[in-house]
Image 1: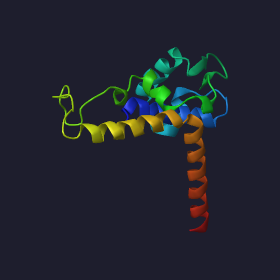
Image 2: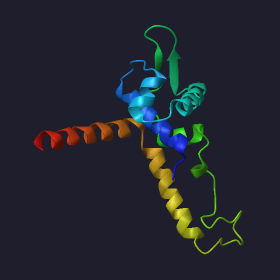
Image 3: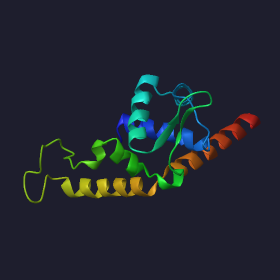
Image 4: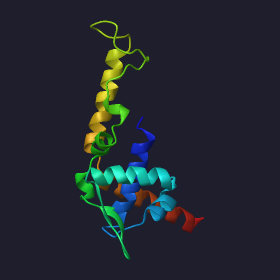
Length: 146
């Protein structure tokens, strides 16, 4: 499970990806994505320092993606925000594995974690934005019918 900060980063950057370069205010992103504005501002600040977003001050200013959405993987965001999923940890809560073979579920957990990391590496903001667009179109079609 990803941290709340990474989840918020994915949601906010997906929103920016869908804006296609148009600068957007933190307040607008917060309202559109249901993310608390103060927390979002901290996340955006971190992402700005790490080169994911750029900011423009003044009239017509705001935040926009600094990178192409297809070049930003979810793994990149986990690294930027120091997500715990990237740290080796015991599923049973042990500080470290008790033996060379690990705890009773070590091998199962390691395989699952490997799959999660692979998913994060291969999924980009463009993928998430495309899925969101598709989902919203389907929702609109259902509402038109009913």
